[in-house]
Length: 282
Length: 270
Image (cartoon, each protein chain N blue to C red):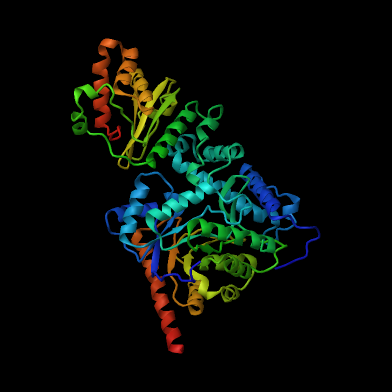
């Protein structure tokens, strides 16, 4: 595998169907776009037309939700073929998916289900990441998920598990800062300790998003603007890792494209502020 | 973070199977966790282990329900939101998703609805129509056969001329004229669902650009379409049409079909 290196693309936007008309009329602008891989594993039609048009506007990255890296089912060869074909079509800057499982016994939950942080899971997931990277011929990024339960037999905190998976699987990390915050609140850990435990050199992308307070727990709903505590944690991440390609996710009650673009610009402004402070301190 | 459990924790495979079982039970109405799983799920003051699993169980079926509502919008409207949710819960019990893409989750919804007495009798056929429309929407693109291209075919080549439907097409055989109750934002239904009566109906469904169309077809066109989808020659299609409409009308009828298909951009370029 090549040395660790993730290009800095700036501030991207998640492409959603509500914004397809803006892509097609040429008024959607962003440093780069992230698309959900499975939404484009298709034979034809409007989505692929939009994808091709998007690729002509800016770099694209593929973000999957069904690779099911932690599943004890065999890796799905048809899925990997489809992902490889899609990658050949769009030549993404990188490909990412989640540190979780989502299928067992051939049945898909279409959710990002939590793994126990055990040696067994660590060995299992690391080997599958390596196999996926061999199949795709490239290093992938693996994202931490929000979780709503933990296991009593976990042997290490999540950040140690993520760092160890990345090291053993030799993959990059897509650090979802909102997910860190949501899980920290749900499980009572310090999100700053989480950030401390992540190897900076492996962080290739950051996700920001909104969440919903359900009273008994926070839910990762990707609704609304990024909340202030998540912005604060983003500042902490920038302080630790330097500038990282960043994307705001907004999937529920999706706003006008310009509102989403404004949120990305807010992330850019915060990045400039934090890096200026960092330089001044140095 | 780490607590010494009283019994050996389940292996990863067993944990995932038990977790999925809890999701399925929650989707069916009540989340029930396997004792071995519950023993290793950490509870909180606000949520005991079963309640924490239930967070996932609710998201599981709601996410699939949202996807099916997008694939079957007219059916969801006709049966109502509450009843549609109940149908999805029951559907997941017998037809869990077996494809990594959520867009395949509704593949068996029509067949699932067919024997049910708690939905309108046309529901299964309406579901089949909406499913066909959804599949056609993302089927492979293809160049279409034009009238100008047909004009270049020499007369002696016509009998052996092979015609193909575009990939973004489907032929449906239904017991109900479901297209009469189908509707979209800009196309109101032709018939009140309460007034729909059974009628054996063949529908041709296809996509032109980004728009999906459907039209009922007469028996002669139905016979021709079946052959067309298998890559038949013009002569074979003429024979099939003649079998339905009589030999005398076959050539004229087939020519009319051909012009209609070309106008609809339904035939793939050779």
